[in-house]
Length: 194
Image 1: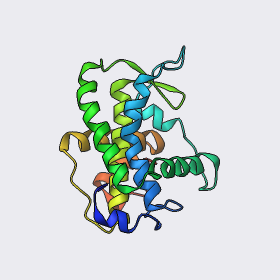
Image 2: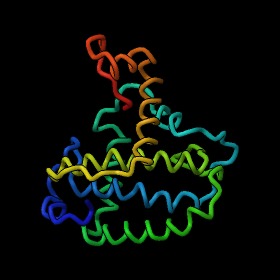
Image 3: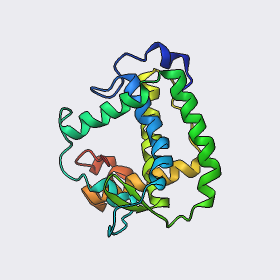
Image 4: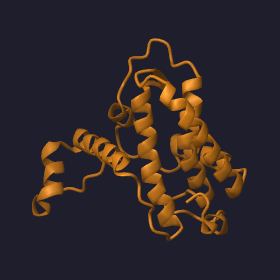
């Protein structure tokens, strides 16, 4: 998707996400990989108790923030910062980071503590948070470009769906999630992980 000619054509246009331009969304998507390279190079916060990916995502529990709140504004701004190099250079940087990670990650223990926005996660859970970001925002970018969403390997989608389901269960309870998945006539409220 980062090499799509349509991405370059729509770079300055609004994306499928409110208040996000296509460029910022592309930068945010790429940042999921860039952060996997950055975070293990930094020392995690001292004394932090490691948490899993579900707990990490639930740490922002509460109503969805308003789009003009500080955190959503910062997310958009940082996405634009990553995208400032332009679509071609962003794709090159993304591919280079992926190539370096293909060599580095297999040498790292999966229980290695990693600092993620003030939290400590074992490396495998840190990677799961980034995988969720990649899969979700890959679809957002595809919709923004009016292109088919690229397929993702089943191993990745299985992990992402399991994580999102656990988040939805924590937010809404087992019965509402089960009914949404199996008995839509009994589903009473919309269920979402985020």
